[in-house]
Image (cartoon, rainbow, N blue to C red; front, side, top):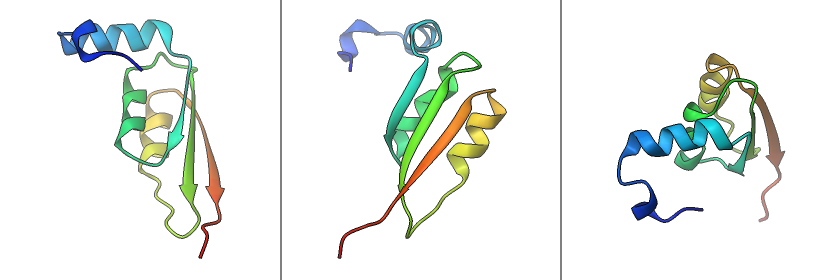
Length: 77
């Protein structure tokens, strides 16, 4: 996690992600779209409920040369 003041210019944030982030792990959601700034060969692990499978992040990750994995989770209830 970073403080917004650390990267006042969005391009500085994109460059930092590209140089320093090799894996991105998280639940399905908009935050995982930061993977678009990662260098090719990085890993994206998306946690997604089985009740609602969405392929959008797979397509974006694959298009950027990233390794994509998904963990389908069984919801409670």
